[in-house]
Image (cartoon, rainbow over all chains, first blue to last red; front, side, top):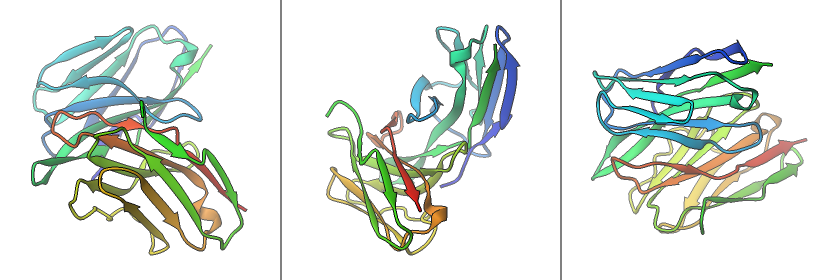
Length: 114
Length: 114
């Protein structure tokens, strides 16, 4: 499956700093999903976005569905050590016959320095 | 079940042996994905099942890899004549397969080939 482009690939930040990461595609998406994967676990859904321009928060996390529908951003405010993990974006692409196949980015690996 | 269940959680096998990994998706989910994840890396798409449609096998790395799914239930991923480079976590996810869908992941099977 075609992958989305996530940046940065990795980042090291100090505890308390804000974090911003993004995901871009050459194709339009009608849904954007953001996942977090902690070491030794499967990815867990953080935020789902369904409408262009939508801004959705989940605690210290905020995600936005880009107006062009070709990008999305995830921000984490006041980072803490438990924010460590890999963050993935995903979006469904029409695979025909009324079904949709999810495409995932390669992830942004976040490290937080206490 | 309440979530996606994968078994075994860990598997150690000798090089050259065949292994079979199992995924029980969330009941009613028509779409199922297999991904491979090497240590500290992103998700590598392997195969996608959607209902009774022909699966998308475009991500399978070699003919040693195959997967089956019975209807909209259990899926098995088989790796024949395992090699050390097959060592990775194999993740399964399931979803309704619709445009506004959200995928849910299992905990993964950690495969070690010695």
